[in-house]
Amino acid sequence: NLSDRLERSFKILKGEGKITEINVAETLKDVRRALLDADVNYKVAKSFTDTVKQKALGMNVLTAVKPGQLMVKIVHDELAELMGGEAVGLNLSGRPAVILMSGLQGSGKTTFSGKLANMLKTKEHKNPLLVACDVYRPAAVEQLKVVGGQVGAPVYSEPGNKNVNEIADHAIAEAKARGNDVVIIDTAGRLAVDEEMMDEIESLKNHVNPDETLFVVDSMTGQDAVNTAKEFNDRLDFNGVVLTKLDGDTRGGAALSIRTVVTKPIKFIGTGEKMEAVDVFHPGRMADRILGMGDVVSLVERAQEQFDEEEAKRLQKKIQKNQFDFNDFYNQIQQIKKMGNLKDLASMIPGVGKAIRDVDIDDNAFKGIEAIIQSMTPKERSHPEVLNNSRRQRIAKGSGTNLQEVNRLIKQFDQTRKMMKMVTGSKMAGMMGRMKG
Ligand code: GDP
Ligand code: MG
Image 1 (cartoon, rainbow, N blue to C red):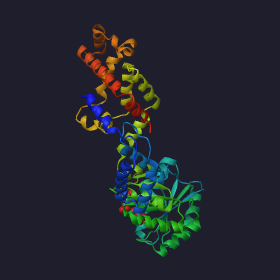
Image 2: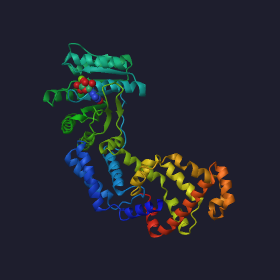
Image 3: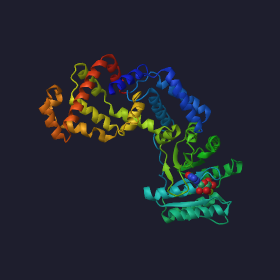
Image 4: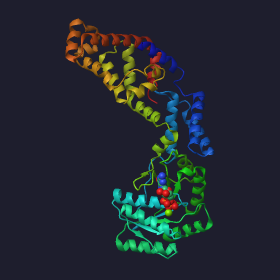
């Protein structure tokens, strides 16, 4: 029965309430594995888990979650912090603002140029001009024109001219004349870093002095992405990173490694070939993705938000004085309901999760109980002992239930109260005190 289950869950929780060296070590092993699976550089993963360990030891634990799950939350927040905390926008202060793309061939520069033009048009009401500075392959200019056509942005190109500095100058003059407030310069890449390409892009950067130089990188290239980022950053000192091809099953570890190695913000992610498949980079979401444990993290957050320490203390006092009444019962149900999907939540409770996995619970489960409590008078709620047979019959009618259901609820309530009284004192006090992390 219910009290047995609760009893058991208390036992399981005892001694697990604080984060210890042992459960830290266990969880961090999982975390490190997740990071390596996600292509995070080995050294980065190691120093990261060391930091988390320091933070986690001795932290308090919510009753509704296991220490391991709290660890995941700590890890998640630390990851998000490491990847920049907040999303970082573009500097568009120039008149026109000039944005220079850099990166290897195939990384997604041309595609992202189109996506960015589209975003700026639709979200910022800008009027961007695309500039074709990939002058070696005629197909590259064609591709930019196709992309520009898709998003309705003009494309500036100079057939025959191989001097990209000149093309950029002319394009910027053209933008001023035509009233384009942003100039997006698409450039040539190579399959691997080579001197000629680096010289060209570095010279172009110094020549146009862009407001933003973005480094575009294919997230599927894993460790190579980090090395490439470092080489480009050494030469260009770029402002931000665009991480493309995150639509596959790549888990985004490159984001963490790149950020750690070059200490530049990741600003956008590409999630597909279509012009709409782009998003501002959100460190929190990427942390979810890297960990592959988003559900746990949000559950912990929800539990933390909803448990109120003051309320817990107040309740504890009432229980000790045997004053736990139907008002408290009702409030507790509201607390539980606020935490969202009950089944998810219940399955997280140590010891209880498995036992109730097959039980059908949803928010409606409380409807009858709520109706019964609402049909009680204030006096009946705070002094349940007055609930004699005629009162019960009245409540059954008023709540649209029947006498049997009313009797059952009152019986359950009495049992709960007894059980709470029994386990109160040290155990309950300790648990309640730990509700807030
Ligand atoms: P560039 O050489 O750097 O200009 O790269 P492109 O823009 O030509 O992109 C190379 C290939 O990657 C093209 O086939 C694009 O459609 C594709 N691509 C670019 N970004 C993404 C993305 O975010 N997701 C997917 N799945 N494909 C992308
Ligand atoms: Mg291109």
